[in-house]
Image (cartoon, rainbow, N blue to C red; front, side, top):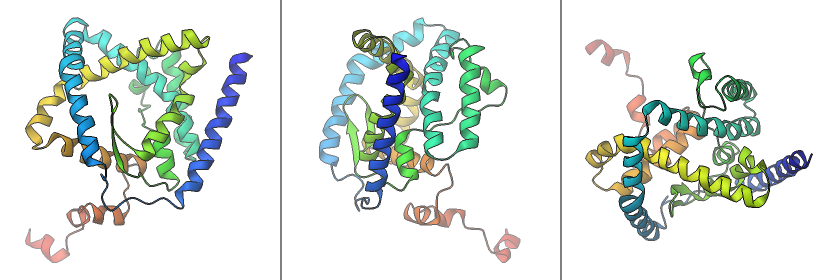
Length: 262
């Protein structure tokens, strides 16, 4: 009963925060420069790079070398399954009820037959993984992303996504585990494993980043902001944003005469 009451209380908090940020949506605009804090952000980025080089990357490389691939996939699936609770919550907040039903089925299937999500049974039967969070929910309701932020340890974000991250914590099922002391230990242990697992998954992509990026900071920032826009609009970016990004001309249909010449 205590856990249920705690859950209901957190639901009320989430709804109140959602209402608060929705009200702010009408008076919040993006700055002309999406990265007005670039000088500060670059310092944080340099710090993160050093932490990664000295600690995180070596640990991730050891993890990848020692942990068998099936176990690694199981760990990734486990945390993905926990995240599906957050996904379903934000499906509902965005009125995506059909997707919410699909994601709920996915969550139940993987949590039971998939043994707490270790095995991704749902994907194999045609229930795809969706990405939804409260930052996207705020964007769905019209709140602009605000200035770009580089967070210590956590990496790229924005003012909107930082607020969303705080709300998503309340939807994390781990919040309802045991008392506060055990909760802190449980969060710390699982988060450390999650971070190492995620970093190991990105090891193979690092060479691509080093090859493609003349400036790693700019490349990561631009990729993050574009991806977040894509997720907010579910891939259906409005014409205004396509023009702003210089992408609209690339997807305009060719005149019939030009098509014949080609």
